[in-house]
Length: 331
Image (cartoon, rainbow, N blue to C red; front, side, top):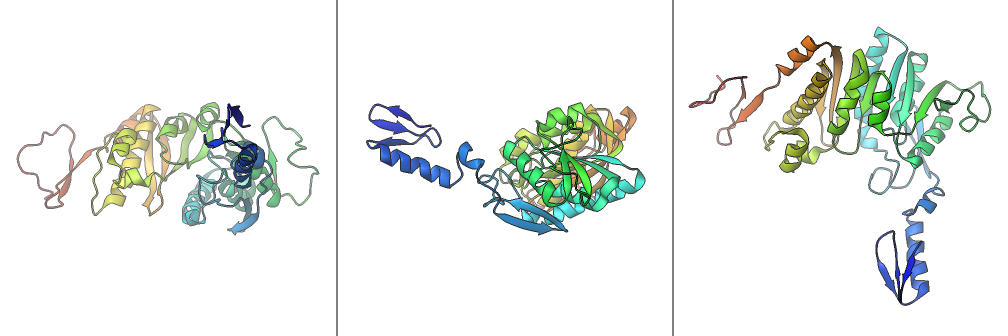
């Protein structure tokens, strides 16, 4: 609500000050409401569009492909990312079932919905998001895809499913909490991390309870730092000095892998790299988790500094314990 300050009105939404007339302030607030920039308007902003991907439907809000303008982010460009992750989950489901699977940052829930629809009883899917609005949209999308959305405390959920429809194809657990808290509380066979920006803040929690021979997939969208556009941010998040090279995308994938390997090693776990891909919008890394201190040591032994020459573009991995003396050649 706007607060009156002498002859002026102050908007707590955008911190603007509107002078003199109350009607001007009312118009100002109405513009915020129309744009969906207030909590009150958010509850009335029903999804206006239904999108289809891989036989899965999701309801989205306007500007859903821009995370700064929508609380439920959905990017059609990331379809390749979702398909690669699904392939990894399919392979794991052939080894053992049912799998406990977590999409820690679900937003619209599109990825977990695809898991549940296509793999059915082979997976127990948990969709998590800390946003109230995202959780509401996830539950709506579960209904849209004939999936029952439940919470852990619900034995017979009424809010999520008014009637036990025989056409329901499965059940999805929906949680609303900080991803780090959830991953510390429960164990999973398959974890996917796709936060807005860097994933380093969630790696320790992911490897804390992931089961042996499970899979962790990490999507990093902080390409400005990984692709050497903001090197100070890369230094802060990943502890490395990145320069722009002809192989900058491979370098980005290796930087993410090094952060993952160190996080796993802190939990006495090693990793086996199954897939790494760096495209324009994201870096995706999928690893298998190998439990044991000796396996953790084997993974960390593979971490080395890269020496790159700006003049000739020659590069070489610096071996552990070796001092740099004189000229270096990759031969």
